[in-house]
Amino acid sequence: MVEANYLVIGSGIAGLTFAVKIAEKFPERKVLIVTKSTEEESNTKYAQGGVSIVLDHDKDSFKKHIEDTLIAGDGLCTEAVVKMVVEKGPARLKELLLWGANFDKDDEGNFDLGKEGGHSEYRIVHHKDITGYEIERTLLEQVRRLSNIELLSHHYAIDLITDHHIKDSKLSNKTCYGAYVLDQKSSNIITVKADATLLASGGIGRVYGHTTNPIVATGDGIAMAYRAKTRISDMEFIQFHPTAMYDVRGGRSSFLISEAVRGFGAYLRNQKGYRFMPDYDDRAELASRDIVSQSIDNELKKSGETHVFLDCTHLELDGFKAHFPNIYKHCLDNHIDVEKDWIPVVPASHYLCGGIDVDMDGKTSIENLFACGECTKTGLHGANRLASNSLLEAMVYSHEIYKYHCENPSKISDLNIPKWNDEGTVVPEEHIIIQHNLKELQALMRDYVGIVRSDARLKSAKKRLDLIYTEVETFYKTSKITTSLCELRNMVNVAYLIITQSIARKENKGGFFSKDNVEKVKA
Image (cartoon, rainbow, N blue to C red):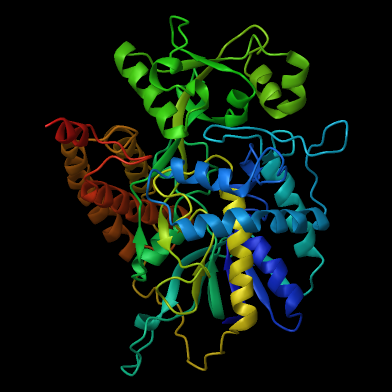
């Protein structure tokens, strides 16, 4: 048994920001962070673009940023949330700067603001093309200086501890008391009892296989919350990043070519060299991500090709290298000289706009359980996230959760929490079952639940997923816990949520597009 005042699951911008603030405010209270890989491995680390912040009020305004966000969200944003996040953003950026974060500036010492798809003004604060890496570095430095924070890397959260784990008929309210956590090095399962638990576990990209997300993005927090019967919504709104580099030799896509490259002036071309985006939207390459992704998908379906190209050959090379050094180097490492060669790109799973329902204080439908970051549905993104609003959301919501805890400190529970029970289970020998089902699941999601969906494909996907679910659950109930088995189980749960909520959606909005809904409108 391990006890903590605050348990934080995840070590990206959302979890670390809350941990630093609450630890500074209450030095006598213990903050425990668990993360399943190394301490810096998270979606935050790989965020290239930046943070959308209104700083230049002569050219920009909160009103413009709010309007851009609402347009991208396609009518499904919560306007009060959008207003709160946009207007509180500058103060949160100021804190990051005080903690030591560095962002690019021009020769006059002003922030070198970028512009990305869906934005009407230049408002993206960035650090080269590795903004997330810089923010992660800054936050981890703050964590290390605080003695009341303990960060356990290579510790995997298996399940939330809620009332159903406790054999007491008097308990009727849904309450979270902590989590069961696997120490991946010793294989021991630790019972963590906490006054308050924060899920900051990131996204779901690996459910699709082809993704810009890191290998840790398996939807663990959402799946744990789902099994604990927390409210979860808008899972049908998957944002596919239009331009992940396509490996023409291996047929894979993973490395992100930032939205900012198109903001810098790059063109999208098909295999014949034709610049096609002006045919689809007046904003051309700067249209929102859902439109660009659907446009590329349509080009690929028409041609039968596997990828399109991003053309940077007309851009000023020194400026490109200064703004995108990591992208430039990665292209060179893959024998692509952006001065002469087009970059092969394809849409890939990038960001989840839905997730665990939270209010404006980050509270879930379960008492003492909070959530922040990509695993949540706050109402900011609606049906489609505006570029570079995700880091902003995490910064603002982690602060709002911190404020709530300052005003409403959690009470210590005196309940006896049972240890993890794995009686009757054995060490699995057939790991091929995990790998086979993982590959089948990922192919199913790409082929049946991708950028363009249909009623028939979604229903077929659900039938096939039911078979995978039955096999995985049977294997799970008889096996000792392993990270790969738990990740697969979580991805199956997440896939179920995406498929069923896609079936329920009868109108195309933002990141959700079904060809059957188009036919209904025409009829």
